[in-house]
Image (cartoon, rainbow, N blue to C red; front, side, top):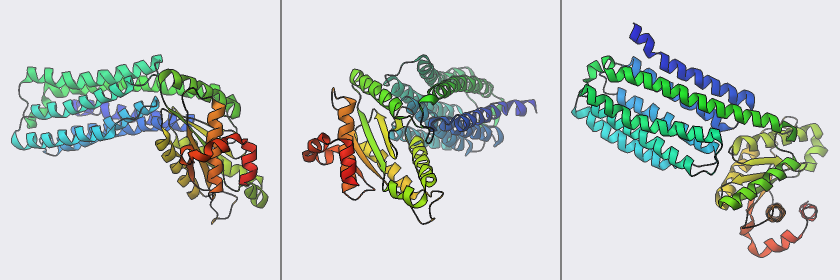
Amino acid sequence: MQTQILGLVTPLMALFFAATFAVLWKVGGLKRHVLGFAIAYVLSATGFLITHIAPADGTYVFHATQVFYSLASTMMAACVCERVGQKLHLPSFAFVYVISALVLAVAVSTTNDVGPRLIIINMGYGIMFTMCATTLLAARRREILDLAVIAVMVFQALDFFVRPTLTLLIEQSIPAEVYRDSVYYSLIGLALAIKGVTTAMVLIGATIAEWTTNLRESGERDPLTGLRNRGAFEQAMQEMLSRAQEQGQPVTLVIADIDHFKQVNDIWGHQAGDQAISSFGHLIDQTIRACDVAGRVGGEEFCIAVWNCENDPAERLAGRIRQGFARLKHSGLSDDIRLTASFGVATARAGESYERLFSRADAALYRAKAAGRDCVVSERDDPGSSVADAEATPAERRRAAN
């Protein structure tokens, strides 16, 4: 009975941390990677419970736990990478999982000894966290909490590589039916508890730091959307461009404008218009990454600075926002009414100023309006006219589009 109770400590602790991250995400209005931390801990808790409750000699136990632990590891790695603007290579994670699963299936079918199974599974997780740490090291962001996150991921990888090997050198062989009475099973409970707490504390600290930053910047936020106001966005954009020049990273600017917005105000009133602007801003905020910057720079005009991103993926980001906005229902408008938005996209050139980049993206937005609205147009889509368009002022382009 005591063993059963102790075995529940780790999954319950994981669920507690999952709830903590979920609350921080909701209350703090934080980015989606914080919610991803919560999901990762829920998946881990599910894997722990299967290991603890299911029959120890069940042939499916190792396969089931591998699924949940792999999903948890992938979610955790993807979110810590997204936090610093790095994209995890998910196909590599899928490849590691498939190879581990195939080798595990052979081990389960050929021997009753769980030793080979443990080494196979843990080696897979170790490779996953090594790839995560490598991806994080490629990021140029090097604040103290970022270094702590990298250290935690390295610790995770080392544990998965070293712990099963050392333990099995002592135990030699572990039959499946006595697995829960083995030294390894006792050790893994302790190791997982330590890793779970350590990782959670570092990530909670990083999350609270993000929340504090958001609170400090609240005076720079547009009260209707929660995004940065024009001045704050332009300052952040200038800093991002400077950092991108130093680090050799691409930055793409997306400008969005709600179509026929004047008609919304004229027909349904300014309150309905404010609701539409608020919804659009919230959609943008929920779609972009933590490393990106979004702002409301005009009445119905928005800008997104997409860090470490070339033109094509930035166009796809704009496309997802465009499609999501076209599906939204808006209070104060008729149920059958859907609003749309147009988007202009331009990637910063070497040494280019924000003003010049904005002008090129704005010229692309003008062409999106001229092409019928509700579309995404890149500055490079019409290189012959981009220079001429850029020479017109944004106000002139607005008048021409309307």
